[in-house]
Image (cartoon, rainbow, N blue to C red; front, side):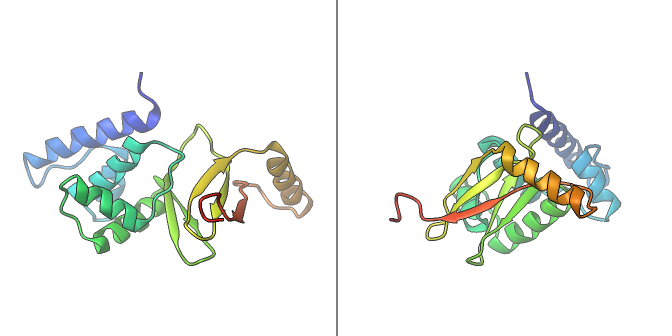
Length: 167
């Protein structure tokens, strides 16, 4: 049985194969349709980045450099600049979540309905990122939003620490 992200990836892959038969074929997938509305294409590079995240699953956090390295190792020809542009686009479209590190780096993860409100434990030296869930943090976010008249969209906490490998 496929989860929603796997079904989406299958639809995107199907659409990409269909589009290869004609350069003017319109892609019929959520990603392809959104790109087409904005005058963009579902390029093989964009599909490869999304496919990489689908393969590693939710809960894994990669930097642009790590994504580039993994794609190059799999014999994909894609530049680091293309990776950065693709990541920005996939974050804007709601397929990926960008985690900004205080040290200036960024990590990306596949958005998942399985753990929508989760938190991150981040090593400030190596960037290792672990997820955790905590109902008290979620409740504190709800209370703070309610007390201040906000509508809560998401509640997340980033804890900065030093991992055992870096101590």
